[in-house]
Length: 294
Image (cartoon, rainbow, N blue to C red; front, side, top):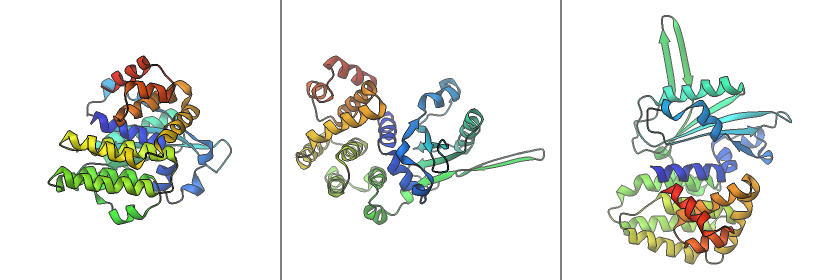
């Protein structure tokens, strides 16, 4: 769960523009993606102190997004990625909604992405009624297991690869051995590499695929990493450099390098020394990030 939590938070930040285009048909008309995005994780934590959260959490993000309706006009998106059954999920979404709305007073939309294998679990509203007072709160929902795989394979949006990866993880029990799962994961990697996507995004998506879909036999993880290294031999070095530069620009040099180190550690393809060299940091810096992941 902790690994998936980290992977989801990373991929949402790394390809958030594609996320918007994937979930909103009119994204080009509504959002001004050229102005970038602001991820308000610390602000969200302040609204929901850890001691108040009784249920185990998966992933939640609060994002400030500029719109095309005015020079300084912006809205908020609350995204929850839910991977387990929770009878109080609708109420939790409403609690997030009213606290965020009260704090910022800005237009706000909520999206719940369900990554579990229970087809019957898909809450989409919260209803409150008491002594003549009634409230009905509805939010956007997206159930991964319900999605049409052929449509996702045909999509040119990079975020479709994320959903295909999660689908593969959900359905991996259908494959009675790691060899068959390996074949499906390999095909998905080849599909990703065949797309006209920037090297930076390919690196992010490959890491997500590598770490999100795991094998029972760890030898297959090693085998898959080697295959990916062969497929990306001409892309890898340049891709890592671009990743460093891109993250440094987006989040500041220190934070950007920490994100790079974290992703390279999750890839489990490089030594501590190699990672330190790629990110231009000390080996102790890499070890400190590694400790945070453990």
